[in-house]
Amino acid sequence: MNKFVNRNKETERIGRALSSDKPVLIVVYGRRRCGKSTLMRRLLTEKDVYFAADLREPSLQIEALAKSIDPIVTGFSAVTYPDWESLFLNLNNTIKSKTTVCLDEFPYLVKNSPELPSVLQKIVDDRTHRNFNIILCGSSQQMMHSMTLDSTSPLYGRSDEVLRVNPMHVAYLKEYLDVSDEDAIAEFGVWGGVPRYWEIRKSLTSLEEAIKYQLINPDGILYEEPSRLFLDEMRTSMQASSVLSLIGGGSHRISEIGGRIGKPATQLSRILSVLINLGYVKRELPFEESLKSTKKSLYKIADPFMHFYYTFVLANKSMLEYGLTDQVWDKIAERFNQYISFIWEDICLQAVPYLSIGNTSFGAASKWWGNGFDGTPMEIDIAAESVDKKTLLIGEVKWTDRVRINEISNQLITKSSNIPFLKNRKIINILFLKKAIRNVPDNIRIITPTDVLIALRKK
Image (cartoon, rainbow, N blue to C red; front, side, top):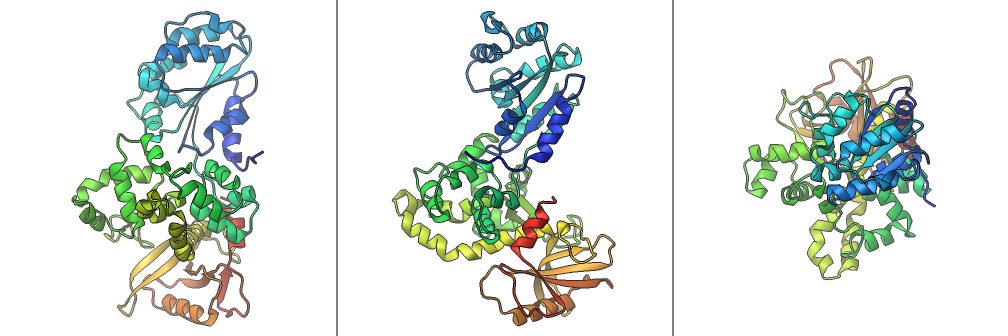
């Protein structure tokens, strides 16, 4: 049996809302396979109604929901309901005690019954659902947002709780797979924070076997996964897939992406904005710079699964279609540690505000790139300012088993002395390493995967 990990905050918020004396409307949305349905089923009791919608005609959906209500209202489906409103009104009039009705994949219902949000608005506004709570759940993030949170939506402003269920952190993947801290980082670089992918991985004995069998095999469950995800959000996945493949291949500036696609950068703003909102892409700015102050922004793939897919799977799809799985795996294995170093860097950036570094607490961290005091170009992997604004954290990230500690320590100190944004602040130099190491210089601190995973549990 698969373990259920984390989701404590989501469970607490939804549970608190459902414990209210008055009827409530709760909206839950998030990327497919992130565990929304599992979360709902764990929260609901045998006295509640869970209904998973599909794309059948409205009359069939109404009939199916009525049958789902039968266990709490005997004979409820014996009545023929001409529309959604009549069903909900009869439910309110016939149930004897407070219950909750969860409509999962709500966008499927609205696709064939566009009047449904207005029906629910009337029920909520007239308090004609005084005997039942309503939970609307869906994987189409854009549709859920437009149907419940957009100011033009009938349901706008009527939700008592709105919850976005996001992918989970690497610390919970370690717990789920019961692996070492280092292995958790490597696993996270492939599967990301999506619980369903974790289940698929856990069904096989090793990371290599899981990748070969389920991800780079044309018959694998996850071989076409990005296309299925995009179907939830957009009419065609072609442009989104093209943009992600270019970013995964090393094109990080919008001008580079536009040049490769053959479109001006201005025509890419919308698709990039969509991909950012969905959590697939992130826009990086140098430390302490803003969109107004710099044009140096870079676009990176934010989701580890998508990052792996567009770095290794799509790039080798022709070989994979010919059944050359082992040959593609050899290419992946050759570059795998280098690839995980990018994932490790992202994880470290996320962990900085939650790390215990003496008595100093830091805010959000980011990379920095530009010219140093001496005019030479350089990059800082991690930079962050302390909460009291008196200290800078300057970090170098490495993912390797062999570390020349004196060499990389000297490089980090040299970079720290050359940063143009010091502004009389004290510097703490940190190396984020794959393994703990001995004989570390006194002016250098070491952060390992163990430290990072402990920190991220505070997030």
